[in-house]
Image (cartoon, rainbow, N blue to C red):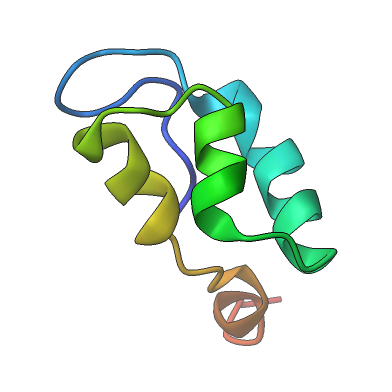
Length: 65
């Protein structure tokens, strides 16, 4: 799944926050703290980030050449 530009429910722009969120989580920061500092307060916006699964590498293996 690719991060949407806007939240599905409320319409808040969230796509630009994904790279920073991903970088900070890989550094070991607490997910709750990062989401709060990025300004994601609503449950609908948080669920987009917490429900994200990076399947791009897996899908790329099956690409027809």
